[in-house]
Image (cartoon, rainbow, N blue to C red; front, side, top):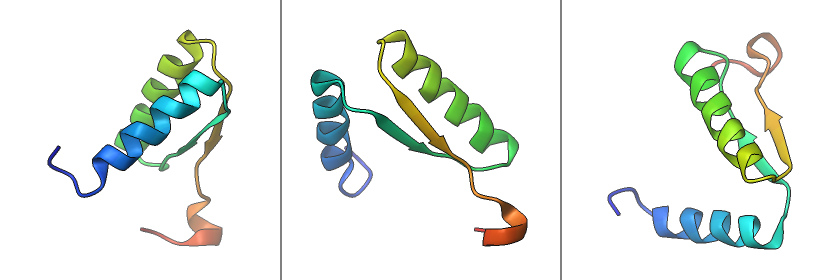
Length: 64
């Protein structure tokens, strides 16, 4: 895997799916962030898993 610690994220996600844990998705308010958040949420929902989505408020929490 090319991203540092990607294997850790994949393993944690896999365990969450197997255990039926709620899966948290931290998104972004821009177009690609909202789109990727929606895609991930739809995928996990198709597996009948609970999903919590968090998208920060740019005005309150700043940019980036």
